Length: 68
Image 1 (cartoon, rainbow, N blue to C red):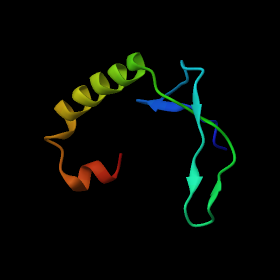
Image 2: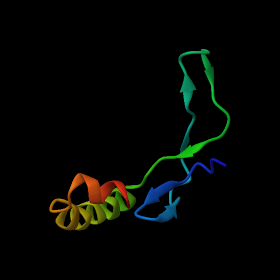
Image 3: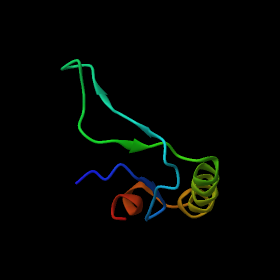
Image 4: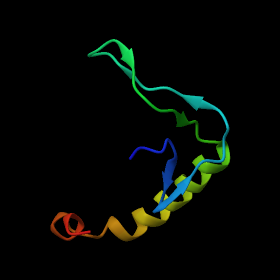
């Protein structure tokens, strides 16, 4: 079920109280639910985790990555 939170690494995060609503251009309607806007702090955490993951995965073959 969609909770409207952000994934940072393997953790859910929802520090902000501001939301957006997703829009379906196919049906021209807003989708159910609200999605929290990431804070600057959450974005920074995600960037740090991405940099750390890249150090490991840049030397991992595509065959090995697909099994993760």
